[in-house]
Amino acid sequence: MTNKQQGFATTAIHVGQEADPATGAVTVPIYATSTYLQEEIGKHKGYEYARVSNPTRDRLEINLAALEGGTSSKVFASGMAAINAIVSMLKSGDHVVAGHNLYGGTPRLFNNVFANFGMTFSYVDTSDVKNVERALQKNTRIVYLETPTNPLMELCDLRAISDLAHQRGIDVVVDNTFMSPYFQRPIEFGADMVVHSTTKFLNGHSDGLGGVVVCTKPEQNEKLAFLQKAAGAILSPFECWLILRGVKTLAVRMLQHDCNGQRVAEFLSRHRKVQKVFYPGLPDHPQHELAKRQMTGFGSMIAFETGSLDNANKMLRKVRVCALAESLGGVESLISHPATMTHAAVGEEGRRKIGITDGMVRISVGIEDADDILADLDQGLAAI
Ligand SMILES: *Cc1c(COP(=O)(O)O)cnc(C)c1O
Image (cartoon, rainbow, N blue to C red; front, side, top):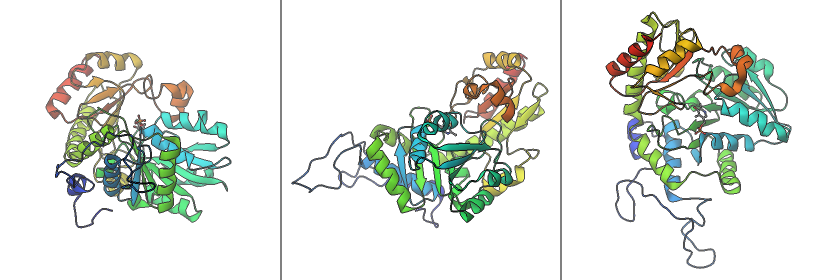
C-alpha cells in the first residue's frame, strides 16, 4: 500500500526495491531459477516452482501495487496476457461492457477468443456515462475502460462510471497504460482493478514486454495467482527486473514526457499543415476540465490530422528523431499511423465509426530535447 506520507518517486524507488537481505545488494537480484531446494517433504522457504512464484517477481508485484494504490498486483508476460487473465476470471454467459475505442488487441481477444466460450461483449462510447448505463445487462460482470483512448484521446469519467457500476455490483477495470500511475490512479476514482501494458511507460525503455493487473480485493489476487499457476503466462525474472529498474525513473520521465508533450501539442496546434490536434492538455480539448480533475498531468500521447494518407506518408518518410514504429511510452519519440498500423485490424468501417482517418498520425513524445523533436516534426511537415 502507498504510504500516504511518502511521495510517488520515493515509493517507486523504495517499495519492493529494498536491498537484498542475503548480500546487501542495493538492487533486487534476478532470481534465474526454475525450482527451489526443499529441506524435507513440505519444508521450504515459500518457493517451490517458478511458474507459481519467484522472488524478483514478488518484488515487482509489491512495487506496482503501491504505485497504483492497490492492495496487490500480479504480473504477466505481456499486457495482453494480463488482459487475458482478467477475462479468464469470468465464465460462460457473462457479459462485458467495454469502450468502443480500446487498444486494438483487446477487442481482438474478446471477439475472437472469449466470444467462442460463450461470453458476450458490448462496445460503447464511454465518454458519455449514459451509453454505459444503457449497455448494462443482468449478466454484466465488468465495465472495461481506457482513458484517454488511443489515438483520439477521448476521456471517460471514472468516478461517474464506477458509481454507476457499483450500484449494480459490477466491477470496473481500467487499462491505465497511457497515463501511468504517475498521472492517473483509477483506484482513487473507484476502479476495482487496473491493468497496464508495462511494455510502455512503466518499463519506459522499449526493451521488454510485460503486463500487470493491480487488485483492490483479496479474492481478485487469489484468482489471478491461480491463473498465473494454471495458465502460466508469467513474466520472466529478467523482465521483472527491467520494470523494477524502469519505475525508478518513472516520475522524472513522466514529468519530461508531459513537458515535451505540451510543447509538441502547442506547436502542432499552431502549425498550418496540421488541421486538428487531439491532446487533453489543450484548453480546446472537449474534456479538458475532466482531464484536469482526474489526471495530474496530460502525458505525451498526441494525435493529429494531416489531411490524407498521402500527406501522412510524406511526413512519416521524413522524420528522423521520431522513429516510425508501433508502441509508445519509451524514452524515444515514436510516431505511427493508426489507420495502417495499430488500427488496421479494426477495418475501414470500424475506423470511420470511431473517427480514425487515413490522415491521422499519432506520436508518443519521448524525452529527447523538445527543440529537436519540434525541428524534426517541422521538417517532416514541410514535405506536405
Ligand atoms: C500495448 C498496449 C496493450 C497490450 O500490451 P502488450 O504488452 O503489447 O501485450 C494493451 N493496452 C494498451 C493501452 C496498450 O497500449
